[in-house]
Structure formats: C-alpha cells, structure tokens
Length: 458
Image (cartoon, rainbow, N blue to C red; front, top):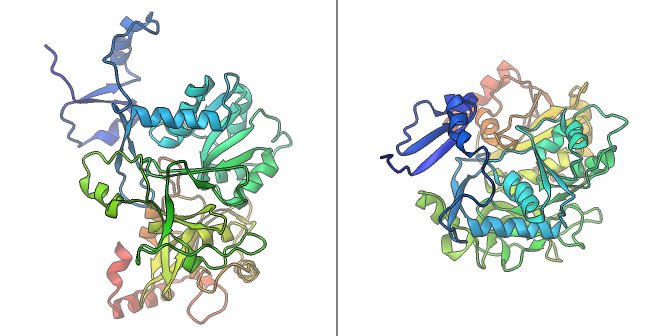
C-alpha cells in the first residue's frame, strides 16, 4: 500500500541541482521532462473534464504557498486559499473588462503572484486564452505578441526596462496589445513605453500576502497608484513614532517636495486578507503587530488621498539624519537619458548613518560621463541636497532575482567593493572621479577608525 504523502514537488531536470542536499521528507518528486512522468500521465490521455472525483474544496481550502520575491530579504511562504485567489481573479477580470476574445501573454514566472494572480487568474475568470512562455525574453516579446495576438500582459519594472533597451524598430506599434499591468515601472519608463509601443501601462499594488491593495480609479493622477481598496483602511505611518505622516506636498509637475516628512510605511488598519506565513510565526507576528497589517512598503499620500509607491522599508536611507526613500531617488535618476536601468540603495557611511549609492546600467552605445551626470543632477529641482549619490556603480546589466526584480540584496552586499567601475564624489569635493585603490584604502581605514568596518560585510 502506497504511503500517503504530505505534498509534491513538480520540476524539470534543469532545476534538479537546486534540490541537492535538501531534506524533503514526505515530498513526492515529479520531474516533468522524463519518461517516468510521461508514463504517469499516459492513463489519463483520453480523460475529459468532469471525470475526476475530488474532495470538494471550499473557499478556505489552502490552494498553494506563494514565496515573497526575496529581492530585499529572505523569502517567506505566504498562504493562499481558494477563496482569496478566486476573488483576485474575478476582481481584475471585471476591472479590465477581460473577454473571451482576449489573449493574456504570461511571460513572468508562475511561482510568483504576478503571473498567476494578475495574468492567469483574470484570464480564467473572463474566459480569455493564455499564451504561456517558459521565461521572459525581451528580444522575443513583440514576436510572441504578434504570433499569439496577445492583448494583455503583466510585468515588473525590470522587464519594462529590458524591453525599452531593445533596438527600436519601425513596427514597434504593429501589434494587438491594449494593456500592460504590473508594478514598479516608474513614471518615466511608463511614459517611454507608451510613446514607443503605444501601450498603456497600469501600475497596481497588491501584496503577495493579500494584506493590502490599492485600486486605480479614472481620476488617479499621473504617478499615483490609486486609493485604498474596498474595505481597506490604509494609512501612511511613521514607523518610528507610530503617527500618521502628513500629506505630500507636490509641485506643479507632480514632484515631491517634503519626502522626509510625508514618506512612511503603508499600514492596513482595517480588515486584512493576510492568511499567514507557512511555519513562520515570527515573520507573521512582525507583519501583523499592534493589530495592523504592516506592508513593509514605503508610500506617501497626497491631499486628495491618492497613494504613491516610494520603495521598500529596507530601501529607506538615513543620510545626515534625514530619511530618504530609494524609489524616489531612482525615479529622478531614471530621467537621465543614457541610463537604461537604475537602482538606488544604502551603503553605510564611514562615521554615521548611510550614504546613497546608485547602480546604473547604461543604454547600448552609451558611456558614463561624470561631467554630464553632475550637470544632470544639478538640473533636477526635486533632488534634495542629501539625495545625490556619493557612489555610482556602472555595470553592464542589473542583477535580478528569479522574478525579474532588481536583486538589491546582492547590490547592497557588494557596496562599493565590486568588480565594476565605481565613481564617487568625496566629501567636500565637486563632481565625480573613479574610486581607485588609494581611495578604497582610505575609506576602509576611516571605517576601521570609527568602528564601523563590520557594517560593510552585512
């Protein structure tokens, strides 16, 4: 008699090396590109829908575990029930008027909520077709869209940057796409995408854990994500004081003028769809402290109640006692035309607090000019005096996680001690120069003198 199993793991031979050394008691391993798997499916080759007899699941039945992306910390397994996933698919299908003649192009990984919740599920709810690609490819994107006559796709910000970095073609607007839905593209890249491909990108926000959501409305201003979803009581909270942050002050061009005061963590003080983390009570307690759901994301809210994404709490920097949000600085640096992609993160200051470091992937054929970059920074009216990067790392391509998000953990870990060219602006100096061996030795000595060397290795 076959022993009952607790769970199964489905993979391909290419991914088997990732399982080496793992203790997986009670887990049945299914490798799809093998003869054994083909034999397992063979008896069901002629099966038709409705023949299988299963225990009837309910809305509260656990359907799967979603791992958070791990772009800023260790991934956590978020519990997702049948009811929550079904509701998410139905909501998006109605919001975007998904119909049977639509074709959803799924090019993001299916182990992440982006592809399942925002692409496959609304297609299922609306009766649309799905074109499924094994992995994202910027060079094949438009060819696939045309071949499958795709009308809708989902993205993360890094994927949009990859698409914009491809060589422009005269037929860039010759396709069937009507909409892209995703996160973290940024206002500059979204505008560039619409101008080049004629496709509107709609930014959304919904935590993988289901604890909070922001819904876009027709009157949502440029750069904003929308207002709190139905039933949510969202607030922007200063995590140090627990007080609600004041409304953002925006200039005529929509640029944030009081980021230090207005940016805080987005908190859901109302009912939450968060269903817990699998076997991780510490992380679950941290997420739901004081009876509220703490998203771990930085936002600011304007006077009209519209919410704007400002990065992860792990992406907050403290420079000369002033709190800064990495995403706000990234949006400013993204205006620099030679840059194909930008990531901003903190490196420890040698005396106290942080300094701003930016990783910049240049567009094809571009070279870094310290003079041009300095002139660009000087011309940005919303770049605060503490926001200019102390260090600028120039790399060929941005490191990414398996979900195509910028791998900020890897960037922070290497800091300015990396194999790529790093330009820096020494304290009291004007402009940028290459960080050389003598500069590095001097910096390391300064960290040691102030007892902060260990911070460079975190």
